[in-house]
Length: 324
Figure 1 (cartoon, one colour):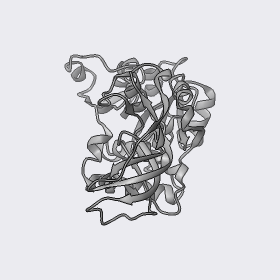
Figure 2 (tube, rainbow, N blue to C red):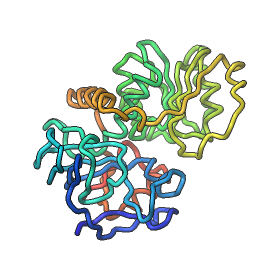
Figure 3 (cartoon, helix red, strand yellow):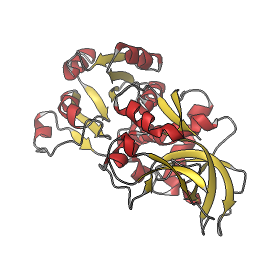
Figure 4 (cartoon, rainbow, N blue to C red):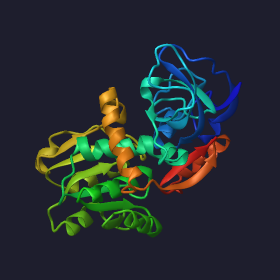
């Protein structure tokens, strides 16, 4: 018997329950993983609230974790008991132990701590696909990053700076603005006090941003479009304020022949080659110290409901790790 956070119904943070579960032995292609930590992400909120499906209830939530392989199933030749591994985007992370397909796991070097790994897999690989695939950032590009002081945002700011971009970060307070600037953000916009699009135009000498990386969704969709240069890209990759409402694509013509995309990490790690490409790049820049992963909140997994409350109240900065 082991412990996990499960939901029996969708709803607010109060539906998260710390319960006994049975894990069992790994089947073919699986491993049993003894976990040490897991990451907190907004996709967990979407699953808990019912915005995203999580399968049959009761369900164990959580989409990224780190631990040590306990047992391997038949056909698993590239992992062994005692190996340290981490993973993104595989439901069931909120648990002391779990079964998981070996194909989803990334081996960790000694230079990456468990806490760092738990905070960086989903967020760091999200930053990777945004910067290298959704819109390949080039030196000299001006880019707009929402939630610039959040887990994905701080990684985006640092990595984009490393690529030679001018980073404009959108944040909710001066404290978060300073944190973003300390992590590679060149300019900050306090969205509660400033008009986002007008400020972006001002900062780019009227040109606009090459890309807007927007994790907020409904509330910022129009501002993001109005912040872009001709042929600019809006990557709306999150729904913190709710999903973007249906719109007439004809508006993209008048705003500069713009592009809008709704990417997801699941597609960008859907093959082993895609996962390895992103993970190798991420482990390299973090291992070299070129990108720092800021773990600014550490909360016991048993207190997961409080972690969700803090995240939704926008009380957190950087990454939150749930310790097991």
